[in-house]
Length: 212
Image (cartoon, rainbow, N blue to C red):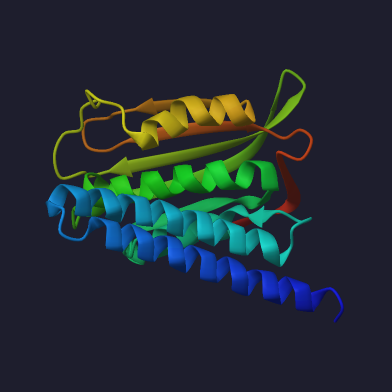
């Protein structure tokens, strides 16, 4: 009980802080036109993703975050139709150093899939797969995000936004990840390789397959 009370109080304070940040964003966008409103909506969504990952870390800071919970949490937050996506992979926990940037990357991919990709089309589908591999004596987590059936043929964007910058630059810089983004005709394909060293990422044995 001695350790629980500060933890509960901290969660309450953190929840209050994020609520204030969201209110500031919404208030700042009022009366500034649709462009500012769109910007505020994007910013508020990213704040929400940060809040979700912090709440998960508070629950068990030394154990990291369950990857499956992280994936489904972001898709659920975007109201993604459960029948149109599935997540498959072994039990995997993400260390606290990798949790925030990876959660933000998943948020950006989920939002993009709904606004421009496969989840924006009734016949579109999304599959997220991850596995553990060893290559050149190094253990890694391989996460693959694949969309099929986007409403229009996808082309590489002419201007890289926050999501692509995060995947192609931030993850390699902060986590020593290897990333690749491809644009099949009707969807997006993102591959992320994370090293399982130190506190960056760790997993426990036992395969699990989950389809909503």
